[in-house]
Amino acid sequence: MNPPTNPEAVPGAGREAAGGRPPFFVYGTLRRGGRYHGALLGGRVVTHGGPQPAILPGASLFRGPGYPYAVPEPDRPGALVRGELFRPLPGRDAEVQADLDRLEGYRPGAPDNLYERVVARVLLPDGGAVRARVYLAAPLLARRLRAEGERVPGGDWMADGAAGSGPRTDFDRPTP
Image (tube, rainbow, N blue to C red; front, top):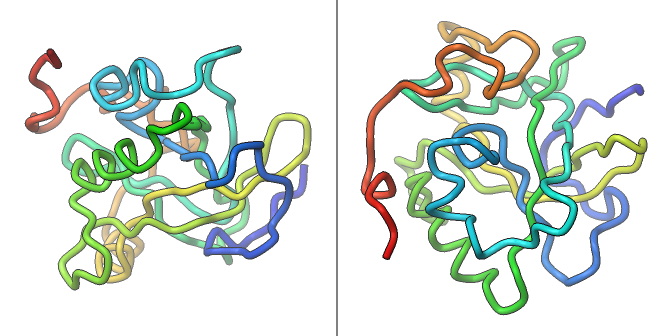
């Protein structure tokens, strides 16, 4: 498969799953088996058939302090991030997005964001593409990571040895 090289927002980038808003593409601690999947997505996303594997082309995955950062690298040959697509259950989209924004420390327009929520084109195993919401490293951090960071080989956080380590947050507490 020849992935496109632009992970930025792409209007009309391909087919979207039914149901309105694009699904979420998750690549780190929110993936099934990841530290925050159960607390933030468990019981609030469509699970029929399990998570849908997907690839974010034109981006590289960097190790962070206990969590990864996807960084746009459209000119880097073979750059990709492996992850999964999840669609919130009907009526749960705003709630899920608010919790994900809080986990990622994302506030629209805030100059100190570590992540930016964008809509990007992701590729499916069948060769199709969908638009999905994804959290990418904010521009200042992305520049620093490109210059000094450590890329995760193969772009797969769950296959990386550092995936289970790192700082804890409020989301580590059991949910009621």
